[in-house]
Structure formats: C-alpha cells, structure tokens
Length: 98
Image 1 (cartoon, rainbow, N blue to C red):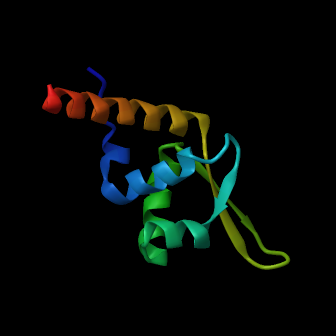
Image 2 (image 1 turned 180 degrees about the vertical axis):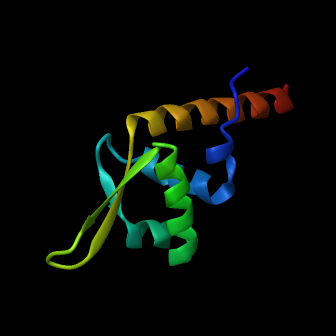
C-alpha cells in the first residue's frame, strides 16, 4: 500500500498541489490566481505555500517590475509526492468500494 503524505494531506495544501499538478512541468501560476482558485486568504495561502516550499514541493519566485508578482511552481519532488499521495487515496477508495 502507498503511504499518506502528511504535508499534502491537509485540505488547502491538497488543493494547491492539485492546481499545480495540472500545469505543464515547469509552468508557474500567479499567487493571485491560485488564491482565487483555492478560495483562501492571502495569509492562509502564504502560510500553506511556505510549508510546501520548505518541503521542497514547490518554488516561489517574486518579481517587482513592471508590477509586484509572486509565482508558484511545482518541483519534480512535489510532483512525485503528489502522485504518491493520490495513489494512496485511490487505494483507500478502491478498498472502500470492493
């Protein structure tokens, strides 16, 4: 059986990782767009991004010109961790329906 990833398992972080996972490898999303999709506040989203970044699951880049912009990108390690966690969840769901 696959293993749960306690970092990703939290609901908001699972949403963040799900959004990033559908992007092409190396593609980033702006903080504002991610906030809109996940329906979180600036502070809440920022705190969860920090946890994921500390785990090396995503990277954050900031640009000041022409306007301040923060972008978030899934790392290869983050993509692998997400895929592993999804496999874990599928095993639970498949077992529940068996």
